[in-house]
Amino acid sequence: MTKFEALFGIKASQIRENCILMPVIPKGVLAEFKINNLARGKLYSASSNDNFTLVHTKIGPGFTGDAVLWLKKAGCKNIILFGSCGAVRETKDLTIGSFVVPVKCFSNESFTVFLKKHGGASIFHEGKIGKNRSVPIFLPDKKLLSKLISAIGAKEVNCSSIPSLKLEESMAKVFIKNKIDVVEMECSACFAAAKYAGIKAAALFYVSDVINKYPFYRELAVDKKEKLSFAIKTAASALCQLIKTNLNV
Image (tube, rainbow, N blue to C red; front, side):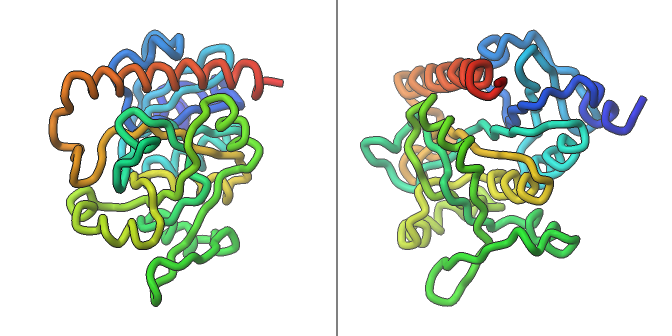
């Protein structure tokens, strides 16, 4: 058994050019992807259909960033990070079940710092958070982003990848002041690793919580749970169609 198969549960030769990375696998989403089950490796679980490979990366920037680097060696060319995010504040088009695509992602996690120290300095661009603080900014591939927006009709947002769910509530005013729309934990690592590896990457998120209004640790009302479930399945179906018709050409 190769290192890759031990880590991912499938052989490198089974990886498709198009990959969907998911930190969490919501109930029922595998059926939407026409995937029966995921083969389990030491770090990841994965499976491929005719058009793409789905990888369950687990939560955290290190898992996602490393997955991108390994997938490059397996021949992956396009990556879509698909998962949940928290809205900093609720608006008409930014609420539970809304679709968003990050057009700019601020890095506040350690994977990108480690990558910079080990040969990735050239991919870094600094952006301002507040008057005196600069943080790395990472961008999606423009063409892949455009295709996602066309296929899903998602709202374009500024995103910040953060390392702490505990601290996000106290940081809400800082996020608003710096025009951050949503927060999550993996996007900047995904974009940074993709840029470093020479892979096209973009992200599609569904809003699963709103900081200080619908916190992630509270049970949603039945109507909002149903709306969120429908949104996840709708997005999964749209991703399948996008990859089949617009990426496999």
